[in-house]
Length: 233
Image 1 (cartoon, rainbow, N blue to C red):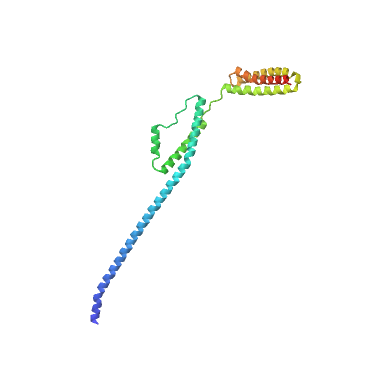
Image 2 (spheres, one colour):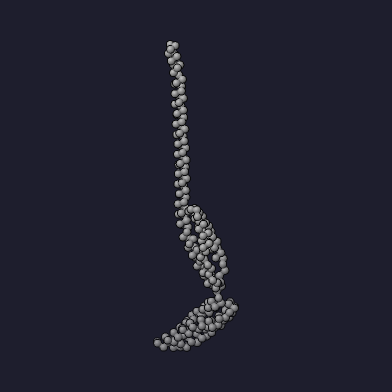
């Protein structure tokens, strides 16, 4: 019994050391596995971040492609509007082509990827909105005195011509050329006189020669037509 007990007591330290070694190995294995899991999680986070960055860039590219054509169209309309204003005001057309320095500055401003380009486009859209507001508030040149006078004399000439046609159609066919001439002269004289007074008040400038031509020509033509119809009946 004593020998067996001694043998068992001699075996106990070895068994204990083996158990400790097995426990240390298990802890080492667990530590390595934990490091592997943490590295895998970090790698997955980097992958998700990279995927999100790519998706954001693609979204920015699509948005930039959608916003660029409207900006170009509005710039073309603004250029046309400025050309019209320059023509009306008699001033030279401003230079709208960017200088080399401005082009280089714009190229530097959009360096940095699609997101930077999209931000620059949206800033450009804001600038275009401001320019549209300025163009809308820009004063326009009022119509010239000749244009206003043409409108006055033209309206009076139309009324006189209509009155002449109605009056001549009411008289006997045999006397239509005579009445056409007389009514044309009287109505033309009256229309010109009224126009002369109105244009003096409205435009402060009387374009008498232009007014006389505008009033007389339709009445003369109508008189010639009535005379030709009377001759060929």
